Amino acid sequence: MGGHPPRARHIAVPTVEDLVARLLDGDRRALSRLLTLIENDSPEGRRALKQLYPRSGRAHTVGLTGSAGSGKSTLSGAIAREMRRRGRTLGIVAIDPTSPFSQGALLGDRIRMQDLTSDPQVFLRSMATRGNLGGLAPSTAGVVTALDAFGKDVVLVETVGAGQDEVEVAAMADTTVVVLTPGAGDDVQAMKAGIMEIADILVVNKCDLPNADLFARQLASIVDASPHERRTPIVKTAGAHNEGIGGLLDALEEHRTHIEGTGAREAHRRDQARHQLLALARQRLLDRVVAEHTRDGRLDALVEQVARRELDPHSAADALIGA
Image (tube, rainbow, N blue to C red; front, side, top):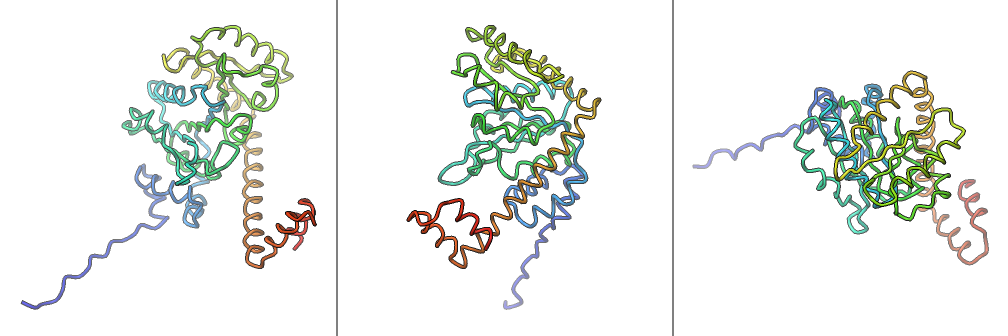
């Protein structure tokens, strides 16, 4: 009864090129696998992006930002449902707070949008910020590129809600929507700077709350005093009640038509390219400096000198870079 033992079956592991080809053919599983590689900033993820980037640039990228508690997640779900009713396909990138224990996303948005995940024309990806203060994970732009190359009409990026640090989203989106809520403690004077400056569309969400009309008028007075040629539209919504969502989508379409008709989209994408290039270059130079001088002990030596007040931080940084 001896005989030969059965041969182990060889399971072929798809290459990055295989996965890219499958993605371009509409394979959602290939998209999921490539997004994981891109999020992890692996060499395979970078190789995939090199192939996908020339196939992107068609989707309308919409950034949805605002303070925590403004109702962004409920609103983004309502936007997605209305887009589907209008026949648009979309990808949703939901940035979740990073868990301090697992460094993974808490996946709250995936739970809140369960009804959308069964729609084959919607692809939802939750991502962790991984400690990034700009409200976006460092690999978010790569995830948007992959969803764009996958053929989605719209890619909606919902940020974590970190306040004015979220101006980072404006460097990525074609249209930036800033969501504000009446009675949330926002000081109108403070809103003149920072996050207000990045808005292509202002949304007063939870418009069924008291003082919503007064709040909208205060915003209008700021917008009217702005030197910008195009007046930023103010849309009142109640995402939980699906109120005003059609008007918001009309404003999104109007902005897309505006930027495409005036050449503003090309100018903005040049700014996006500059921002992304410099951000990646800064990160890689920093990683290289840290890795090199951790190995040779110079980083720890400079840290000790700064901690003992023998050297100021600016001089130490110059020494680290100069070395």
